[in-house]
Length: 483
Length: 100
Ligand SMILES: [Zn+2]
Image (tube, rainbow over all chains, first blue to last red; front, side, top):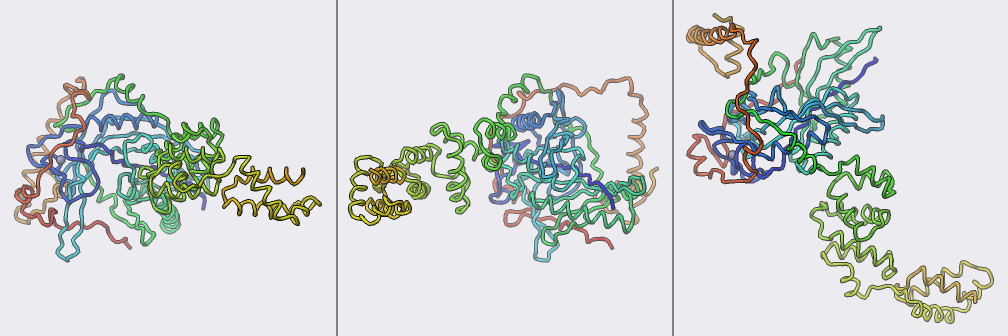
């Protein structure tokens, strides 16, 4: 069976504004149910929405970062449907005049690169949350804390040709939104959610057939996106072989990804599809957006992941693997660059961050923003090591203490008397003593058994209680033995 | 007059269920509303520019500053079915079983 996979994505991004989209209730995650609700986000009669400037600004920022053109005139519309988590029975959204149009995002997978067109980005509000009662009462509980949270919906063209590309697309959107600092992008908390439309183009005897389009919902991680779409490709291929239903004959349906069973489950068919009866939101006037506003927001965009990666590889000379790990999270990349302002050695800094620091953060499940040790402290530690004041081994021990206490490197080194002996005079004294105490090994070395220096070095380290600078000590040893 | 298909579609969108005896009564009423709107559609507006009315700019909007929300006792007053911090509503069925 020969076919192409056709995938388009809709990504919902919850914005991390201080207040909600159309009211002043605080916009944060979780908390006591219904503790951040008011007449507007509860949809009480007589209440009126007032848009949040930051919602518009974030939409423009996201749009420009994704190469979209910004509409000079935009408006809100009502999307009508009945559901208990939608207290007004309509969602304020945008229909035919979205704020951003026609962008582009290039994604990279093992299969190569692909340009994914962005059809549009529009602004809307989130719904409340239903919690199903499990007391057999046939009732549900509703929490409206999330109701009215500002969202961006990013809609791609059906340009992805594999589940891996779809996952890469969402990952890339995730990364860019994080770099723009307009969303916390926490997928576990639903700050970034993805739905995908998928079908197949089947090639049989010179003809092309499109299978029915299926919208997949409820994919809550990059892994889930890939797994759900892979399952769906197989399911649609089997369906085609069993029933030969085309898109024209069967239309669209909606399926939900079920993580536990590893399957997509039918939720809605075309006949049951909602009729949203969009119409312009009469409570909100159309909004004109000036070129000046767009320009002033563009200035706040800063370096995007792709540009940062290119700079890290080409200007800082880092490997691709190191670059990717350093730049996936903007806060981590920022931390790295702050160290460089005090200690301009990218490779050594990268090794340290990706080694010791990453190991420590991962073990304690600590995010870089919660990490007590400052970039300046790491720089100081690396300088101490480079100057030979402490050894590499000591640096690792000092780091663990720094991370646990938040203290500076020098403070720990002084308090614990950890400094390494690099002073030539001091080292010379130890080396001469060790040679005198081990004449046999010294003779072995002089007679060509160069291995003997290893034993003597061990004695130097022992005599210095591990504090001798190994490079300096070894240099001195061979000097003294050869003289 | 509207056909049964349209009538049932409208009832479905409104989540109305209407008993047998009232069917005709409401079918007439909804039919009247729909034919009124149909009549409006007869007006030729092709030569008129869609006027969105007065527009506003971002400066006219609200600053992103949080304010007060409603307190629990007020919510209890507002809703007859408020329990443990939640509004109680009839259960919603989320997923259909795979059709065989
Ligand atoms: Zn509110």
